[in-house]
Image (tube, rainbow, N blue to C red; front, side, top):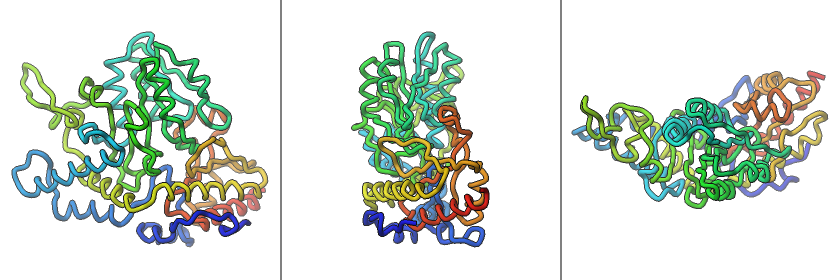
Length: 415
């Protein structure tokens, strides 16, 4: 098996960073944990855990309307967190950042608010074959209600969007193009800026699922020239249950509220209701205050890391995986995108992905198996699912070696 030294991995001290993540210090099933399920959720550094705990210890109160010190402190921390997200994605203003539970809720917000008011019979929404179900099903629901149509954007065997096919699909009937920035199943990095330019040329809007991209420091909503961008905190080394939708201010202003209740109103009477200003128009009810603060702590943590070096490190781990895969008979990588993050998605002849995942777990190696909420993509490749190892900034070359030791053990066992 080739060593990490022979592969000349870039100088990035992942081992030092591991000490910041308490969960990585444990053993699982009698083995040191090798966590390779980062595309599903990343682990949390101690500073994030402490930020959440400290909020509950010191500042727990509802925000915006309390007439006491705890509420003032909670409100200040909550709105500082919004400012932190705005800076991280290069939003022109913080009021364009809407708190949501995650990317799924963000896409549903756009679909049911923007989509129901803007789509009609004969209109089209283009959705790529690479999309997570959360960027397919909401559009199917809204199009069924409005008479619009969901049209799939083909991909190439490599796992890249077929840009020539996209050109053919784009016309004045297309009102929205929905694509992910990075594929959760294959790691494909999509040319979002180019797709946005093509969409805008025919008068269409573009929504970007950025769940997998944010942790890699790729998000600049102004440079990408997108109309909507969605992120999830838990894939960004932050808590679950928190995320953000970014939108162009003119679009957000024109969109009707998604949910009704407290906070999102200006005045309420039985004669009628007027709505609050951005961003509060879309934030009904008590928000997820603690986890917004936790997400800001995660972003602050990432500010201390060279994310371009981290991304290069993760790509090197992918390259190491591809090199070691050559030594495993019957192992086939699914997709080979022109540009990819550190996601290694594969099948092994004669071994069901679930069986391989279970055997790896017995050795303390956590991977994801199945269709990864991308069933149309699995159908395209004619596989029921894959084994997916997804790398993060705290993974090491030794983690990859452990993965392949486990794969070789599976080959000996099942064959």
